[in-house]
Length: 175
Length: 260
Image (cartoon, rainbow over all chains, first blue to last red):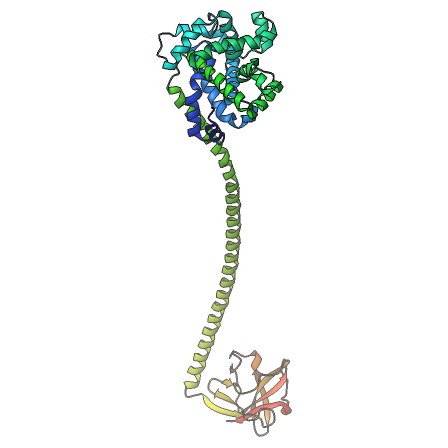
């Protein structure tokens, strides 16, 4: 469940609650941002901006309008995409060649990971390329169904169900 | 769509991703918030996404949290500063109080200046009074010196029965210096427009000669007068005459009469 108590305390400008929320979500936000900007230094910069924004805008989050995680995701993806569109970013990242989130997971096998991550990691590596692609576009990059269907050249009606099937294969790893 | 139909639709995943159009997103949120089964499905989806996104992070610099906290602390302090802009009201209030204080001090200063002027003027009056008293004293000392000397003879002039009963004037006369000192303390104040005139008298026949108007002679508080150039005399009379005096005494207005 999401930490409703902490969220409401943060909305009342409680810095301790905010600090706990940072601990809970910072790695996830970092993952999203890093997958978009593909640069450690820039990703940290963006994560910092995102959490400052979270602090400033926390009043605008409402449970009635969805999950706190979803709210964070939207802020994070937007901030990362804004960064990628910036001139400074384009100048720095001329020679980038990366594809999707699985690239980073493969790339970082030697890093010290949380133990529960290892199971998922194996499942990610076994995912069909189409699954990696569809999760990457929808979840990590925030594509709409239409954008995803155009990019992957699949019928728009199948995007939803394909995505669910792909995600379900990952869920098995932690259930 | 029934609530159960959401479970397998794939819509909940997209809902958690936050990639549905806003109206659809809000509609799903409404349904999910009312249905515990859908809620637990959403939590399960969120859990795997948390895992997945965490897995992609190459590890976050531990110092970053400190930076973020310092930053929001700064922003909170800025907020406090905005709050301190409320203190500007206190600032204004203080300024107004100060202005009030200054005006009050100016007023006080003005009052004190006025008071000083009043006191200075009173002081001047007192000085004048002191000078006048000193002069009076000198005059009386002079008179006293005179009447102590043997050449002055004391002559009592009893008050006239009609005009000044039960009074008297006292004269000290020196025929050597031809001076007369006259104490009229007991006589009534002359009415307005009238003055006392002093006459020296020769008896056989009765011949009055004016020796002066008391109003025009040096005196101590108009009570003790000094008259000079007194001719040879056998007595003195005091009559009340119109201002400026008369050539001959008005005997109806005789106030005091005495012989040497």
